[in-house]
Length: 144
Picture 1 (cartoon, rainbow, N blue to C red):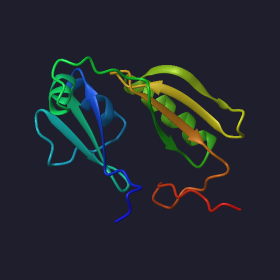
Picture 2: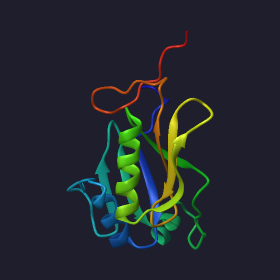
Picture 3: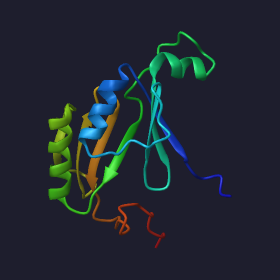
Picture 4: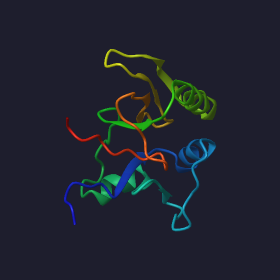
């Protein structure tokens, strides 16, 4: 088994119902293993979770810790600029906060940023140097 892998990304959320409503407004489907205190979504090759902030801090062995947001970026890549624009509009309609509207960027692609209702930063991008697989997943190109 390769050590270079991610199997689960979990975000701490202040309001589970609000967080669920946001991601489900984006078309994400809650996994049946979800419970009142934790929500799971199956993604391409990994699981994505939502967990209450206080419960997450306790589970990490640091009860009472003030967990922050914004120091990391989650990203979704798309095949076209129009798909980025559509996903960005859908996120804003679902309750996201705009950080940077999609635009052509210095590295040759197209991207924009928003935060979910808990302040977690998402980038939506089209990278002309990275072709997506048929299922929307990404395999980085071989060096060359």
